[in-house]
Length: 385
Image (tube, rainbow, N blue to C red; front, side):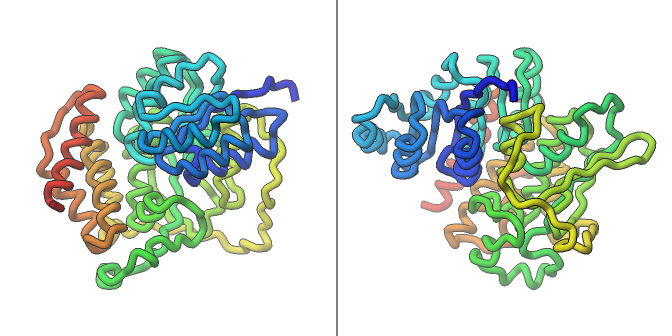
């Protein structure tokens, strides 16, 4: 292996993707170093990670936790920072080779943009960065000649299918597990509980992503992300429900031939590939045994029952700040569902309402996007009080 050691900054180190990324680093200490670890508010886990991986610096977004983290690491050489501003500033460190963007939600957009502006390669696990700021992010990546390496299993699959191809793709076939409620009617969905929604059949993910998977909004966000990552029209992205989650996605070329990327459902594989690209390096994960999956099935999504998918196609067709409106309304509605304030079917209704009522901006700046996002959250908070 000739690759020099890569210093990695992990945005969202205590979340589902972040902890799996550290598993990859733990197994390949000869190849990767955890240079910077940034977390939201989980101070205890951040401290634990810092003690194990001895990063150059750590940052916690929740400034009230700063003192606790600093004291816990006072006997080490680890530099400690707090607040989103500090997280953005850390992206400028010259020692960073690659930034894994895995902060959940629109909060990940600012530090990701800073990393791109400073010429850092980005491994992107945060869908919202592309959903909300796709045109701005891709333009910045082009300008600064920065590779964006997809970490979502579906986008990693598409990316892998395209490596070495010179022909443009004809169509993307984006696979979806269908989530825990595949096959449910609207009447059945009216009764579902949070606990049922959080019980995903194939993937172990954070709470928000798991709920998004149950509503199919996750797939809608992935359609928008794929549009920007692979420079295709959303109309050339077809969602295919594939309950076994073995085929992670496919691409079709002009002659009708299709390439698929397959593997065991685990996020560690796409994370590791983003870290080691362009090489596939040894993995200690179980291998795919076709005898365990004698049948792979495919079906169309039920778009009339799971309305979030169509809302996403509408948002990307409309463009401007509409995907931002949809994304913020979704984040707020999912949180309200988690908190027990609304029912499962209300999530799509809430998103649709916001998309009809919010101010549309055809060519938004980054600041416009942040203020659109903030307005939707503020309005929701006012309703609650």
